[in-house]
Amino acid sequence: MVKNWCFVSTLKPKMVYAYLRVSTDKQTVENQRFEILKFAQQRNFHISKWVEEIISSRKDLSIRSFGKLLNELKDDDILIVSEISRMGRNLMQIMSILNQCMEKQVRVYAIKEGYELGDNINSKVLAFAFGLSAEIERSLISQRIREALARKKSQGVKLGRPKGSKKSNPILAIHKNFIKEQIALGAKQIDIARKLKVHRHTVKKWIELQQA
Image 1 (tube, rainbow, N blue to C red):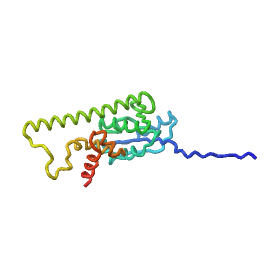
Image 2: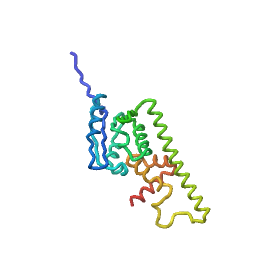
Image 3: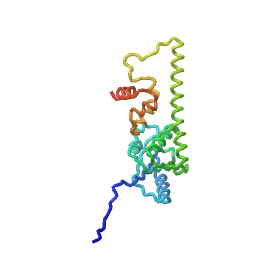
């Protein structure tokens, strides 16, 4: 007797996310929606979830729907935007976001610019460039801090943290937005510390003080 076996896959299919954003309620996302739908049809993609919001890109990722979306993204998921500027407020933030996506092996499509970031050599080169640029930016910021402190010291200014100013740690305060973005992206404190080249307890204590 021949038995017929039915195998049911337990693997979760990849998700295709579409993100739309406008800055004010006087604008509409319909043009973005049209572009994304047209692109999805051409690529035979089915949009699993639409995420849209009316908010300035200058707002922290932690309070944006896009920040929550980035936390949801898994390996092999797809993220589609009409143009890359919808993702962040400046080049460095966008590069940080794209780097996070590539570390998660998420494929990102920016329709207007024709960018496709995924598992290919071009994306790996870009990922290296993103990581290198972010590292250079952090090094430049640290260098400017050291130079400013040295200049103040030479002028006889008393350095050190005044009483009651623990929240104003100059090394981490300058990276306040970066830390918030990393937390919104789900990064661990030890990873944030490694990127900022400080001890993880320093990051942990600073975050706790900010929340106090």
